[in-house]
Image (tube, rainbow, N blue to C red; front, side, top):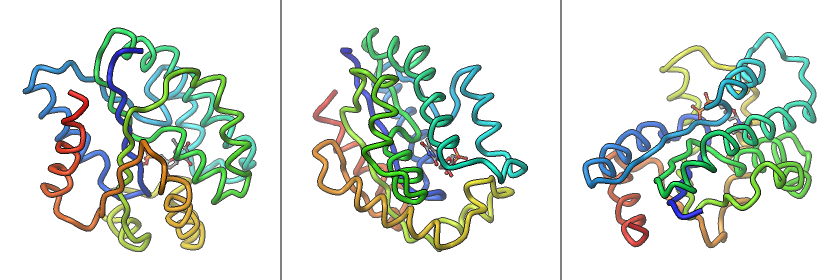
Length: 204
Ligand code: TYD
């Protein structure tokens, strides 16, 4: 692995995709070859898994099935896309990674962070992110923004208590990790983008 692996994390509606698009433009203008991936999905198999995971018709899905499907989608993404790109020296920017599973399945579903890490380890192997931007926003604000955008998916339709667990879970799981940079998601889009650019400057 010789490329640069950047991950954006945060609750639903935290503005990750807007920031990723801006970052990709910036890096490409500076001559970096950049690849964006999204979780769940990003491969043919992963997109099939994504359809199952987010389909509101599958409300009976067990928490364990949910955890395993996210891990399976991720394993395929690393095998097909992230691993080869990093090995070729590219910059990979991922919209979510294993931290989402630790928070949503490990904490909000209650399956435990250790269990989630153990299930995901074989698929991830050596491909650990160089830096993780955690964009934090209050849960009510995240859901309000999502409702304006589109119909809510299976996870987004969960109760406000679930989203509260997710928000708290992010703070518990991500704070204090050396690869994590926390950003206040209530700032302007430009201010957040500037913080991200400043932080990755040292890797480029
Ligand atoms: P998506 O529409 O990609 O959400 P967003 O645009 O907010 O990133 O849907 C992904 C959903 O899946 C989101 O609600 C978070 C959830 N999720 C998990 O529960 N576990 C995971 O490991 C991942 C990657 C996502």
